[in-house]
Image (cartoon, rainbow, N blue to C red; front, side, top):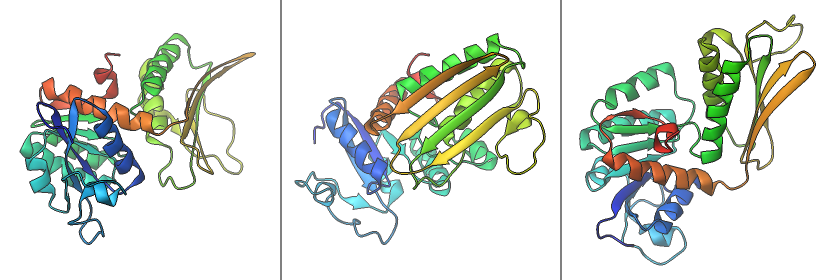
Length: 271
């Protein structure tokens, strides 16, 4: 574990699939080091060396359930947990003035309001997807939606592994927001998230969502602009989950030079 002048990044939910990948991404980055790792109270990793928990050599980082203590020795925290945990983390991160990188999905409007309050004191980078490709897709979606009128129906199709618990995915909603922004409308007013039975004709101007679940699919997102006699399709396929982890670490390092506020990966990537 290299220290020196590198940025100390804490990982919450260290034992999870994303937690493990985030730890690996930090270890691979010469500008960062693992400053701490947390798990929920009672978890079998609590009090043990993180390196040994991961099946390797000791690395001097003890897994803790004392979030405040871990954050006090960190400059940033990466958070791919659950909405309730993320909101609790945001309050502590704001007190400690940390960069809080959030990849958690399924956040409610009330959750988002609490994050906005926390961002008055700390840097928050939140994105439904941390990959360069998806964020480029977001920009393209907004541009195409801006160029085409409502004669082109917009449908967003996403597929993920069968363990995913929320739908539509955070990335799909991010793409929907981009499409709505391009159209100059509010997504909540034109979103169509479920069709079953005799639904009637598609409403002009709606932005539709379809969620598929199966197998070990990491993430596939497709934005379809369907007009009379032609279709335009924009698509992104993720084949390596590590791209999300590397993007999150990039965001944590970028946040060190920013003022308190809410940011997205578009800001981090200069898009």
